[in-house]
Length: 218
DNA sequence: CTCCCGATAT
DNA sequence: ATATCAGGAG
Image 1 (cartoon, rainbow, N blue to C red):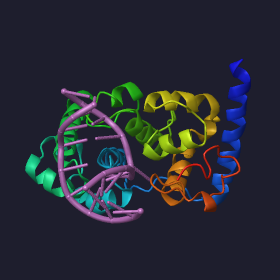
Image 2: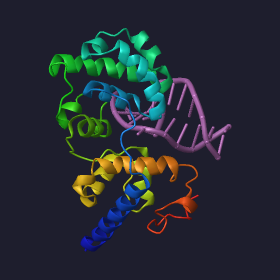
Image 3: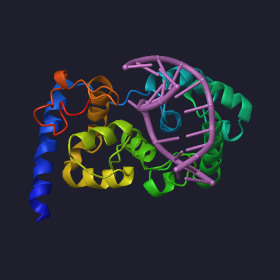
């Protein structure tokens, strides 16, 4: 039955977590923020963009935009100019402004603490919502699946799914709940440093004994 | 599926 | 030249 296959993956994921915790004891969110709104904005900006570039942009952005009202009333071209280096700047600026409008009109200008409420914000899907809930409020409802989590989960044989939401469901079945928040950062760190998209460094990988893709991926 | 978008690695 | 980067919407 599927029980034994799942058991195998559950066991593998525990070993993966154990090794990665040793490799990256400080793995955690790298976006700079000082309140839930700033985290929401930073995470929305982080699509297809490194954390470093987001932090460069938000340093100035957060001086000028401090409340949901500030974003809701923003001049679009000015907002676009501020966030331009993060890419997709028109869509992101439009989403920020529209999302802020929803925050103001529907959620009392606060970042909601419920998944279903966060998902109503334009530009916010489960990945962003999971990041915000876990890191701003300590509410862990799921596992944030970004491009690194997706790639490593597949290479490590933790899932065969392609779709992010399906991968999240698979991971939620095999990852101990107390690691739902942290595993994203463990996999992200390893994905950035070693298990890179283009040229994974299998020779230097602490997981290669556990990894069905080791040395076969190039 | 395509589009959004600039920067960087290969 | 092309793939990829803390994705999401249409």
